[in-house]
Structure formats: C-alpha cells, structure tokens
Amino acid sequence: MKPITFLGDSLGALRAFPHEARRESGLQLDRVQRGLLPESWKPMKTIGPGVTEVRVRVESGIFRVLYVATLPEAVYVLHAFQKKTQKTAKADLSLATTRYKALRKEQ
Image (cartoon, rainbow, N blue to C red):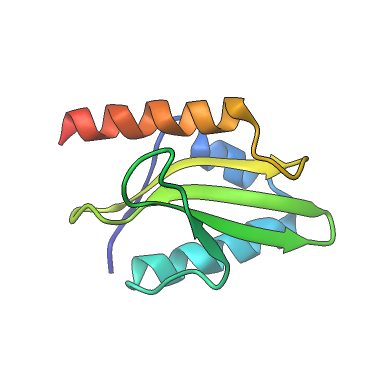
C-alpha cells in the first residue's frame, strides 16, 4: 500500500470537510492507496499527466480531492476543496497546478 503525502494545506482542507464528506474522501483515498480507482473520479489532464479528481457528493455539498498516484513512492494529494459551481474555480485549478509542478521538480 502506498503512503499518502499531503501537499500544502491539503490535509487541513480535507480535515475541514463536513464529517460525511471527510469520511467518504478517506475511503476513496484508501482505494487509491491500494491501487484501485475511486468510485467516482475524473482525469484532470489540464493540471498534469496522471492527476485525478475524486468526486464526493454528500448532503452538505460537493467536494473534490485532486491527487496524483502515478509516482512510485506515494499518492500525492495536491488539493482538497468544496465545489460551489458547476465549473471548477480557476483558483483551485491554479493551486493544484502549482503544487503539481513543484512536485515534479522535486522528482
């Protein structure tokens, strides 16, 4: 099982999710750690190759966790946020892209 590494404030953002969304996000990240795909996901090629979005929909709202699992050493969580509109906010995409690029430079 791959370890999870949270980049920037992604762990704090995930911990700030409502209980149900936090629980579901954790279950989906556990699947990713075991080499499985999340139950609801979407590739995020605009951020970078291998970046995937976990989609969580609960009664309190819609939440997203952006991660990359294609690197051998860990699953890297780039960003976690609540989605408030149909389209993902540019600020969320930009933050995830910046973290992805920084991660790739370290490799």
